[in-house]
Image (cartoon, rainbow, N blue to C red):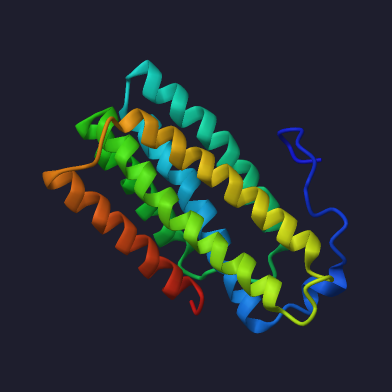
Length: 191
């Protein structure tokens, strides 16, 4: 059981299978850890700045899910990104800066981040599906699919709240958030 009371979806994942991860999959788990650590900080950044009750409730609910994801991924980790403090700071700023502009900016930011994360998890699931030992990795696949489903729900929740496509500076900001997320993943694979 996780601290939140939710059962870990990978409890039947054989440790030998985790030790036998290909280097590419091990790197992918490192990016997941960095991303989930950053996601926790995004919501903490929102909560540090915003006083809007609806936005705070949104952030608190999603923060609980991201903490759960982080704990699950940490339980599997052999190595972490050496840039974890940077990813935490970047996450906090990714939440705090739009919170200064208000709920719409936060919701657009979350929608942009989670759109990227959904694609990222989809690519990892495809990598597992194509692996010669995909059956051994089934519990890991279950975990990542669960995380992906939660992130899709976050994206959809934010998308319903944002009230239409981002325009102007907000569109520029969300494009930067997506590009920054992609860059962080590329770096986390190796550092």
